[in-house]
Image (tube, rainbow, N blue to C red; front, side, top):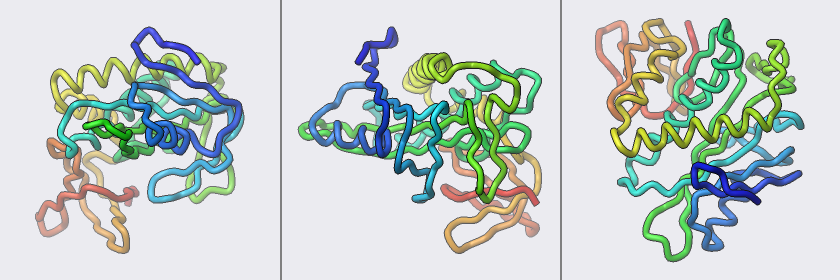
Length: 246
């Protein structure tokens, strides 16, 4: 256990079922402070929509817990804060590579997935404000295999950064961007997100549950919803889904 210079408590474990689940357990037990939970290995990690996430030793697995005093509808905006923080960290290490953000918060290097982010909300007993758990996984030493998509790790890119060094840089970037978001809103965060957007201005397929929509990824709205212009010129606003280039 340690305190980070940004005023956030750090809890580190050798193995957990899931850093997000450990965060929930602590929050539901009454912990309402800002903290980060990391684990060398997760036995039951998951990504968005209940998908399994392969958490391999040597990679980064952490959950950042914050309790921002904002309206509940704004809590999902932290997904974009986290995505920009991770993109910054990776791009700094491999400046010659294309590091893109795939809506809403996957990080791709040369089209292969290197990081995923999962946001969840939990409530501490007696707290008036919900806590947000920002789960982040980054492939540092190993890339998962047997996936439906291409994956890559930093070691594949001849980057020898340690998971510890990446971890502390990520916390620093996240706290800086969270403070910017609290002070000035989501606008400037989205502007940086769009600078690195995967598929922006291109024809994409969006899967939302059992629906599939095709069109041009035109922009994000002020809340981060994807604006998709169809062949008929109509613009659909999409709040959740998976995107694929056509």
